[in-house]
Image (cartoon, rainbow, N blue to C red):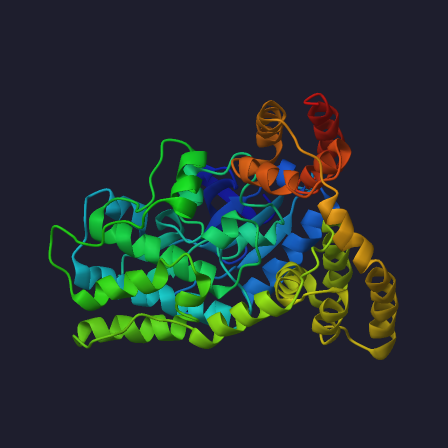
Length: 431
């Protein structure tokens, strides 16, 4: 494959196959990850993959497995060349049972240091789990597959994602909300719990059950059979908060508290009172417009021309803090390169703003769907969207004003245009 001579299979999964290969140019071994064609057949996905790969390759940190090379074969298959490490992944270590708390802290600090370096470059991993952490023969922790889930433009809730991936997703990630560094902090809390107990905190036989546990079940019991420092228990509480504002605001505070465990210092729960007060005041004083899904998608495509793959994060974050189209415009303007581009966006938002009143009224003009219809839609959409389909059906059915609108809202979560058409045809049969 390109300049690489494949010698054997290392592993395989929904995101591709990994091979041990030799770089014939530099006479060194690499781990070659080959992305399956169905993930990159779309030109937009391919371009996003290449752009993000360039960004990730610039990360230089001892706890991040950086990219050596990105290439494409004559038959349009993309591949990534990574360093080949002798060692074992963290999931293999956890299979042996609970780990000593001092070892857990040491490993966690190294993972957090690597993640913190990436967060400073506005790159969120979003798929932290034991299989993506390797411990080398020199006892150095390396984060694998950094950003690949975001690079290739494939939603992690799509068909084929393993239950292991779902188990580490944050509540806001599962609900389709904007995510930031704190979604990695949640995953680190899950990882901490699993290393200390040998079990995941949120369990289920199937993905929907795991998702329900993450969103609604009681938080896991943080009393352990083997005594651990009280500070470590508090750290897990500061990471596994469903209220994102009660989680660590960044990994800097997380890392500082992990060092405090070793020094046996006392730490406190993290609360963001100012954020909570602001949120309450905003809720009571302002009527928030629900932004049209198509508008948000169009904005992401437009902004991506200027800021690249971070457009999704920027638009989702801006829409989350904006109460109307005027505010959304102001929150996005700073990311545009010149006055001409900003003026075009203002004009576009002026048109949208004039329709805000009608849009708010339209929200009340919804229809009721029967339980049988919704269950049919959940079954139909799961094969296209994955285990998050149930949540999306329940959410969009509350705001759709017709059968067609509900089907279109769900289709907007499908990347492939042909699949969208096929889905809509099948979904219409539920009514």
